[in-house]
Image 1: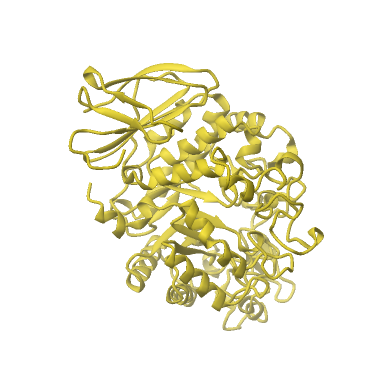
Image 2: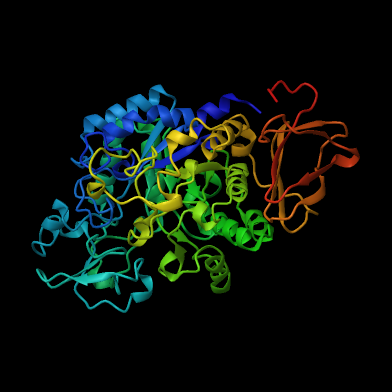
Length: 563
């Protein structure tokens, strides 16, 4: 494998860390996280091994959807800092080898955005067609709403002009009219602005909504049809010219066949990366059953990507843990296993919990799950606090339960802010999941902590570029509770084995193209590395404890890597 390619296509073996600035660290003592606080923690992220920092929205906002209802795409929420603070974070991160990408939310704006205020003034306002309006009464769209707890239609009548405007999300978030060429130009202009300030890419929010053609009666369509994929291809080309190594990470929760289209098919000229929602949901079904077959079946269906495109693997993000691609019965299995209380569930499709609480704090199972995620072909994405095993706070409503402040120190405020706890942006968990029990300060000095495990995991992942560059190669003949796969690129290969059940298991793997006598060394075992040797026919025999795992790197003669 040519290592120089890993520099050119940096996202293929990056480690992405999602940070919510407002809940990360408050430096000025107002109870609200800020960019200056984030800057103080860049070295923490560098020490962890993060190579790409994804910032959730930091723009001015009406604060009706935790920052995703934006009132100015070129600004910074004054509670968080200034554009100068953003540049300082980017520059500081870059000096530590960390690229910065930012949330790009152009499917909608806040209803308090100046564009929408102009749009609703009159039927002939120049900004009228920047949003999607209809005169006729809309049909029943109750099945299309994203937040059924708050909305029963994706259309809302505006009393000012008597027409209906489109909003796939909350009614306070009117959809922009992407069919309007002026809106498409503004999207490019916005991207160009942030690229000039030094970002290395964008996490593109709600892509299927952003690039879906909005259905209107023909008589009410003011613009000719456009090809959403042509526009996405145009955007990718634009950011590529502005910055040669810019990455577009798309939130695209659709079946694999549709995801392949958003990559640009075999040409790979649209989104650079996409979250593997199908794989994530299958992981939870496999964890619930202690059976690797659902995950193996899903991974086998992953479409083959072109050389530059990549999957983003994750176990948790900032929204509800969606299980919408599972069948109703499968979803209920996961609910029963990891969120039986209705208050732990959301929208009848997901869970508002973090992984450690779902797994009952079982460190064996938690570490196995993250080892599994990091071992899958693709790029791992972490949500802040995962590295220390933070739990959720179910007292916080809705999806925000997992967005409690980062727990830095063993004290009531968790080291998040000097302000009284009552003034904090959100309350932290209490009890066994509170900061007195789970925090960075204690774990950073404990070599047996989850934080140190993550450091090792990230280090080994970064030292094994075949993981990020390989395709799925699942080994057959394993017990149902075991997933065994090979990450292989040219002569570099690592065999990954994970036991999803509590019982120990002995197994013999047959690894294709593995020569007899080839040494294998486990990269993630604690203490003295576990070593073994391939037998005749490429067979490898090993024993896994309950929830045990191995990363067995092949060490053929002439391999000059450190083992």
